Image 1 (cartoon, one colour):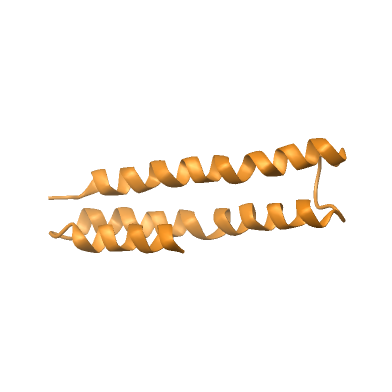
Image 2 (tube, rainbow, N blue to C red):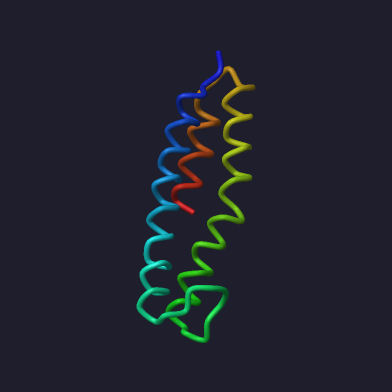
Length: 88
């Protein structure tokens, strides 16, 4: 039986986390008035990179999580992958 509810749970967690990473970027952009692209502001640069790293790595891991949940008979592999991703 597929364990897609586990995958759905982690997808929801990471969707909220992305919003949590996006809001500080937007707020900093408004504060310094630099709305497009990169900026010499180091605080904005760090926030952009944190959000960028999240966008680069999490979707592929979530695809792997969904496929693992759909293919394995045990829920533990999908749960372990999701927990490891949250810890990372």
